[in-house]
Image (cartoon, rainbow, N blue to C red; front, top):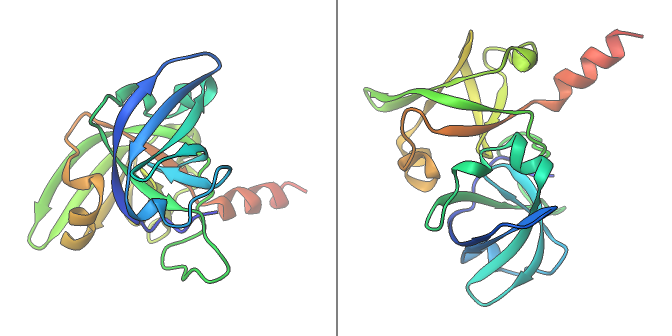
Length: 194
C-alpha cells in the first residue's frame, strides 16, 4: 500500500524488453534507503517488486499485462518517474490509500498555471468516471491529488511545491498518465449490489 506522496523523482537507466516481463533499471537515492529484494515500490503509481539493486539504482520487472494497461510504452532511457516506497506502520499517511493497481491511463489535455496554482486536466475513460467525485481522491502517476472538476476529463489544482518535487515539471499536453481511482468507491458499489 502507498499514500500517493511522492518521495523522489527517479530516472530510467535502462529498459530491457522481454516476455513475459520487461526489466526496468531506475536511478534513485531516497528510494534505496533500507531497500531489499522483494520490496514493493510505486513507479508512477504502479506497484512493482524490486528484483535487484545497487548503490545507486534498483531493478523491477513489468509484466506484459501491466505494460498494456499503463503508460509503459511512453518510457525510454532517461524518462523521469515518480517513486514511493510502500508504507510502514510508522509512515504518516498524508495522501490517501493507494494500492498501486492502475485502473486506466489518461491523456493530458491541458496543463497550465492559473495564478499561483497549476491546473491539470486529464482524460478519463468512461468506465471509471463513476468512481470519481469532486473533492475526492485520485492518483495520477502515483500522486494523491484532489479532484476539482469531473466530466470526460478530471481536473486537479496543483501547488507549485508539488509540481517542483514530482514529474509534473516534465509533463506536457498529449502525455499519458496512470490513473488509479479511490478503492473505497469500488467497495461501496459492490456492497450496494447485495
